[in-house]
Length: 117
Image (cartoon, rainbow, N blue to C red; front, top):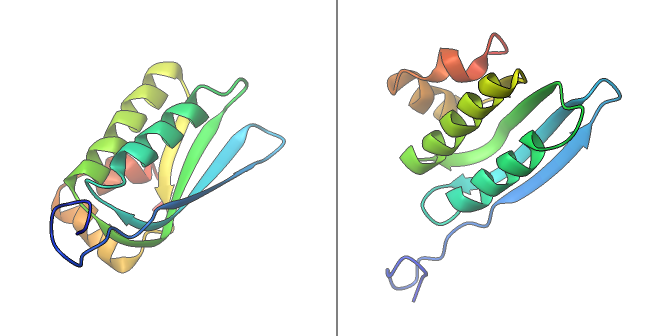
């Protein structure tokens, strides 16, 4: 039985890859589905990056995200609020068409893209 209680349905694992430039910008590339089963993993990764010393900006690359639900949006919005409070740049980049549409429909795309969209 899947972890969400549905027989035969297993969550798609979330893969996260970080790269950092010399000027303190971190790109966090996300691959997989961001939903109830994986949002906590994304939340932890975002918080970990935002706690790094000399961080100037965090770019969350969503090109390889096949699904994003409200828990993923909440994780991104929490990271945006934290980054804004700490004076760190934040933006989602390379949104797949589906992810961009979800963010636009929910009214948060412009805030999350931070001019990077």
